[in-house]
Image 1 (cartoon, rainbow, N blue to C red):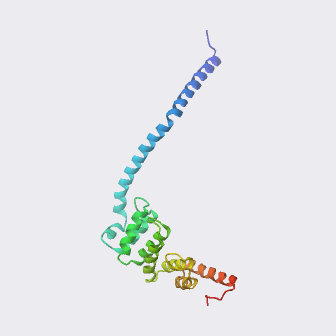
Image 2: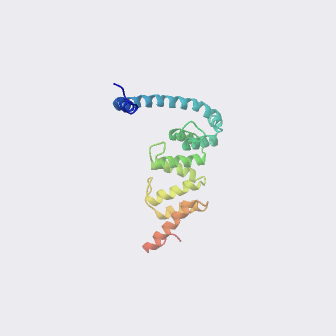
Image 3: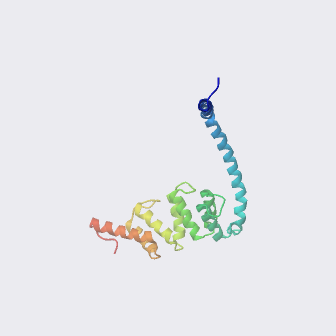
Amino acid sequence: MVLTNSSGYAILSLIVVKNINLKWRYIMKFGSKLLLIAALFGCTFFCMADDDQFAYDRENNEFYEDAEAGDARAQYNLGVCYFTGKDVERYNLQEAVRWFRRAADQGYANAECFLGLCYTFGRGVTQNYVTARSWFEKAAAKDIAEAQYNLGWFHETGKAGFAADPVEALNWYRKAAAKEHARAKTAIERLSRRDNESNTPSYLQ
């Protein structure tokens, strides 16, 4: 039997399709296992790359050496690096908090404020308004506007052990607004509108 070219192509096509279908069934059957193996190898490779990058970044981060030597400003800046993932091996909130705490324990005001924010929003630590308040109070006493604003927010909302007190909130907002803190200015305007709309005696004078 002699096959014409068209008949030969047709049979060859059927064989190819049959083989493809057979291979596809095997791929579908074992695909999940293959993906799992690939994921494990990929994860291992990625972790090894992180370890290599860890040494590189520590050598090149401009704050690391001074931070390890106990410089509070460098410790704070290294904490910011870990908080943002910039110039370090990986974004790491727990490591950021560790460096903020080391700087804050030396009385570095910006680190005290940043720790307050971490505890307020539960970033790298368990959320705890009372602990946040204690760090904000330390930073606010050193005239950090962000800390003063957050104390105002605690007083306004009645958090961190404070009773809701718009008068005391306003006092803190005004301190922060005097340093051009934008959200403090917005808070003062909000309290002013609330006071005007409620027709109550003003505490904003």
